[in-house]
Length: 133
Length: 244
Image 1 (spheres, one colour):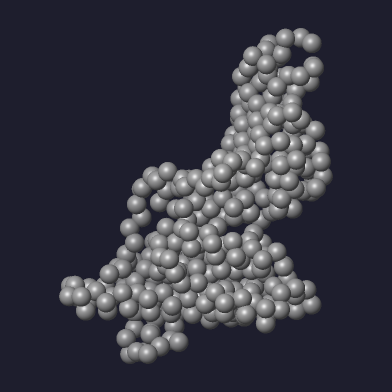
Image 2 (tube, rainbow over the protein chains, first blue to last red):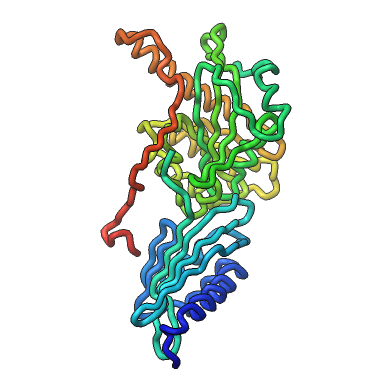
């Protein structure tokens, strides 16, 4: 495989598109089933708002619990940086779940290259809701 | 229970405009109430039913709070001669409750809670326990004023939680219970008025207490000042460092 450190922008961009495609066009059950293969089986972590999970089964359970029926998304920026063995991806965007108001969010992925494939080792999602006022 | 709409003149500025006009600060008490409960139980519709004819809500996206305001005249049940002008602030979540991501700022200074479930949704009733825990953790007092609402009571054929069960649960936890319908408006105002009565009774007791203690004759809770305080978010950790 070509040196991914040259192509990290393409890899990160394509990953984000693929991930959100699977995330947004599914119900909770098929979302979990579709996304779990993207995580690195041996070691992976996810922080989705206040729910923290390590390992694919805990992450699956967390994804299955997401309660919205539909989700709409607008991506504002996708930032990528090369790592020694993968790619760091930072996303900023807006989501609307069901009839809720629109929220800004930030989402971070670490992708690790394994046998010519990339897998998620770290995933963090936070809505931009602050603790002031 | 004597709550009535304030005179038309107070409301006229807001009514004539589609945007939210600032209200005058001419009131005796500012009371902040929170609506809590699972996503989809009808909190927003409920508050809309209670206020919308008069005021639109304001969504503050940075803190994820949707709030509405309403002016009412409050008369204590045991002393209806004394009328208080109350400025009600009704705080609503903005969907983040589906991720259990309410910030502590949401709870700060809340005086009363409208705890809501959907009578056609068993889970929303089961989760009332955890909402109670959350509000007791974050509320300013150990025993906050709470009323329980079983919403969507108009959907009789789809009902999953019986009135008897809900009433029993409310009794165990010392809360009044109301069957409400945000769609028809049934019991909506009555429910808010009951909560306001609980809050006002508590405040008047506090005022009375401080008066008896020789404090200056003044209303203690005149206004809540919104502060720009930046407190670190509370992190809850279990034995595994929060990871599971």
